[in-house]
View 1 (cartoon, rainbow, N blue to C red):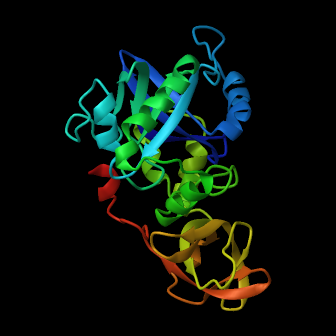
View 2 (cartoon, one colour; view 1 turned 180 degrees about the horizontal axis):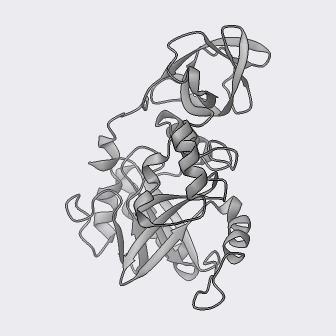
Length: 290
């Protein structure tokens, strides 16, 4: 599996997909649900006249995510495949069974912990859910929601579609250069991307730790530097593992390596903010790769 940005003709981000190689020339493309219709229209408008068909599996494949240091132990109890790190490494993709349910499993994490995403057809959804809860009862398996997920991904400085990744930003600005392969020949947005790469772009996505009081950033708050508004926050919240108020946002390229002078405006009050390099939680990524 790999993260694969999609660009428009100007070289700006219009999608961030996870692409899974299922073997035998078969690939699955997983996108952001809120943007599905937008992405389908984009792809349909650019299909070759013959030889290629496109359809959404939205009503056919349903997904679950499990995460945490015991998630491998849970899956090992119910999967027919070898779930060891050697047999199923980070970014691996397998078609196997979970309990009695035929499933597709990707070892990928949006939490920063060891994690997996599991897809089954709709008729197996309830069976999969009950299998996971039953087999993981003594491991402490429990539900987690979008607010918990948001807190965890902020601690890893993971960007989110429609917030950190939007059509006004380029891969250079959003820190996604490593996912753009210039060696594969021509593609939509190549020239625009190269222009941004050569110029360095206009802005950079950065992470702040904010000296917040009674409220955290949530998005669209002004970023100040030395008394002037220079950028904006794209998303934010409280990182419960690290015990800090975190905000992601964009600042001009010239300030992307500044050591001090930043403030984030929260509810009309400017609060000191320190730019941090790398993830606040497990910066080496050993927890999700181990």
